[in-house]
Length: 335
Ligand SMILES: [Zn+2]
Image (cartoon, rainbow, N blue to C red; front, side, top):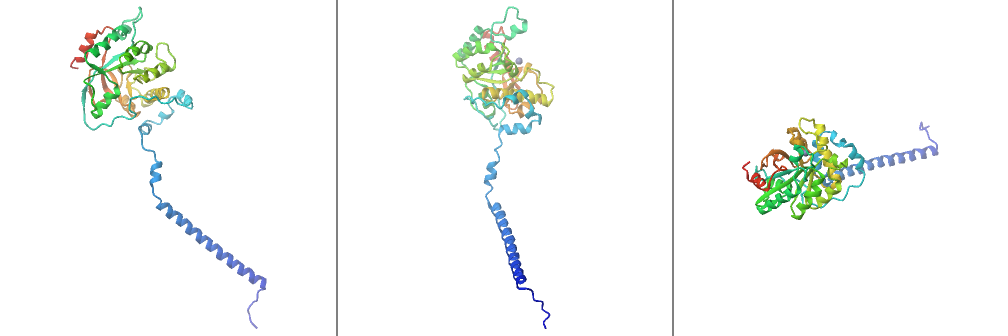
């Protein structure tokens, strides 16, 4: 007698089947492991180049966004509403897109930057301030002709900053022509006179005033037309409020708000700011610099520019009664 328990044939077949099934399963699991291992190795061996390419090259814009407080992105509400509309085709301008990289040298250059405001004959009832800020078109034409006769060459602020930061040569007697506030008479009276003489200039505009379509100020169409003809349109803030003694959020709102509006309307980014009423402090400079502005124009009188202080460019105020003779004297003063 054997004690062996004989299983029915059917059950023996089942055990064999289970055995084969178990073996198959183990093999599958093992194979799966190998495949996973292989894919890990493959991933490790794959050159990292695509990852590097996927990382965007740091641009000026990226820096600005990173440096500015979180509120920066949420800033101009009205703009956010308009942004879905396609941006106009960028205008071709002779100006560079990126700031000239400073070569490490500190330079001082004598470049007079003239500051005009209104370019019209003031109304009869104008107060002393308005009269002081208004240069009649005939007088302006005489200024320009005198500058040319004396051998001056009008250059853009872009050429000046390039010369300051990299030593790019400027013409012999350079002069910059700027206008603050963006009055409509700049388009009606100054623009034709400048264009007829192929002289570049800069207009610092108050973007809210243009958006509100105030009749005394430029329209965006006028700004676009002038931009095409070599007049650069830069920032004078959003609403002409003082930029001194303000907190970061407010300064970001002024710096980015005016920048985004100009870029949206004209397709080019402003790189220069003129501080309203000439009021600014170190915080103003820091915020405008972090928003990728390149330089700032003050109302400090002078003509000596310093590459270490691009946000404190002095200017020369031209008044309603500045004669061409006086203008030339101002230019040659040892400021
Ligand atoms: Zn102003």
